[in-house]
Length: 333
Image (cartoon, rainbow, N blue to C red; front, side, top):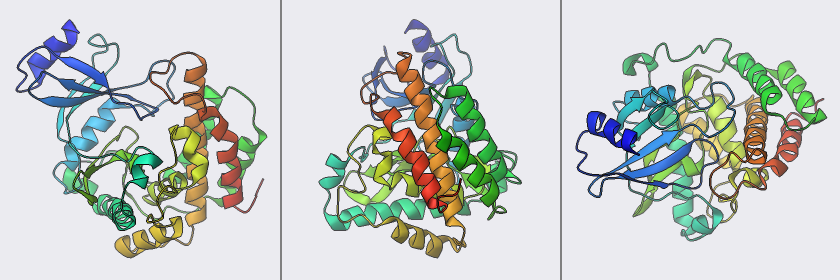
């Protein structure tokens, strides 16, 4: 704690006393802490414990994109500082401003919304995604943030490669889905800033108005790429098959006011003007990506390297996610 307090004193404006940290539960990847000196609050994020999949927990990437988007109109926290020195707390970390609001981390919270508010919340989530994808990377200093040409092919290869690094078992459906995606890979639909893990509980909502998003969080997988990859993954999270990954009651099915996945896709198409005729590929890619992420979380849990509750059932989602991906592509193998 002494090293962290010294770092804050040197790099975080306005620190007025000793720091207290508390784990913010709900996430299954990077570790997120609320930090306070008794007067102000910040959020500190660092990678998880244990073996990490390459590119999946990039603190520098998260800091850079949040700092850039602070000038864009996309709702984000204020970027405070990035520490690349692992000697301070054992890993690189970012510090952001604390954004007050509500996060629908589970279905119990989602069920408390009036159905009309649940619909407005989901529509706002889609609208902010379209707003993000409309940002010109050049105008916010992110022209070199990724390589959009060939993005989809690299994604298919990357998530198959990351499976090899984290797998705790052999699943034939993993290879079947990978082959099906290789055959179905379309040309990129365009290039935009891609969040990489866009979902309901990565949005902080206004506490008094669930139809207003105050901040989108968890940007460590952001890059430049095909924006429909974000939409495809968001729709995967709308499927209750992903519930064990999140470790809570599935929020989108807990309130009848939430739109269906096809309704969300239609709203995104209307807001963005993008062609969704190949959306099944992007959804299937989302199922592969989430299956690999879940397997990595499961591997860290088996190794005793997770912090907080809700990890026991994550591994059970992996076969079902792979099956869902194959079904999305028509059962190809």
